[in-house]
Every structure is written in structure tokens, then in C-alpha cells.
Amino acid sequence: MENNTTTSRKVIVFQLGDEEYAVSVQQVGSIERMIPITRVPQTADFVKGVINLRGVVTPVIDLRLRFGLEKTDYNDSTRIIIVFVDEMEVGLIVDAANDVIDILESEIEPTPEVIGTVEAKYIDGVAKLDNRLLILLNMQKVLTEEEIQELKSVEG
Image (tube, rainbow, N blue to C red; front, top):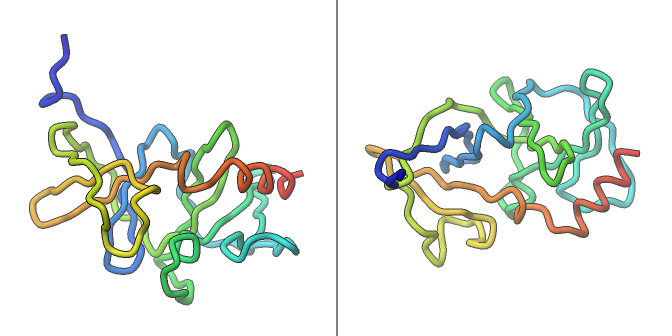
């Protein structure tokens, strides 16, 4: 029988502003440098458009805008993290993708009511590692069912 002190989850850590976020590696397809994004009319403001990634048309959202953070210019460290949400690939624009680490389940705490500026509903929990606080994202909640349907229509 496994106990939670030894079970760990491998996550990709990325940056939005001063905060560090983590998403499970199992949900990540790849991490890409910024490439040209084709705008799609009449989509939510955080939907930047679509990219053609190795022949797959993938919708891209700006996580800063999704979370209501201040918009910043993209630079050399800006990355697009390709994640799988409900069997669909979505690109997330982040300020930087930092590293891949293992977090012990015992280090993950439930989400506080308010964490920084990001709404608690998007968050699976937080992990305190040394002097870092990682916010674990729940990708199923970052995009609502309607938004996923809208993005699927963008893909086509």
C-alpha cells in the first residue's frame, strides 16, 4: 500500500510574473518557443489565436490574460506550453518555463482561499519547496467546457 509521503508527482514549473506555477508533465505535450500566432476573430480576449505545430492546428491562450494579470510583451524567455485538456491540445503562453521537478504529495497543501491574483478555482493546491511556492494548476478548470468547445471550433 502506497503512503503519501513517498508518492510524488512530476511537474513542469513555469513563470507568470513573480509567481511560479506547475502543471503535471502527463498533461504536457511539449514546450515551444514563441512562433507566429494567427488571430481568430470573435474569440475571448485571452485566446490569442492558433498555431500550426508540426501540422496540428493548436489554439493558443495567454495565461496572463486568462488569469486577469497585466499584459506584457513577449520576449526570448516567453514559451508556449502545449497541454492536453479533454483530449485536445491547447497552447499556454507563459513568461518562462523553468524546470521539471518532482513534488512529494505530502508537500502539497490545499488551496488557500486567495492565492496571489489567480482565482482559487483554477488551482489544485500549493507546494512549498525551500523558498519557493508553486501553484499547481488544474487544467480542467483553467478552461471551462464552453471555452473548450469554442477552442475546438477554432481548431477546425
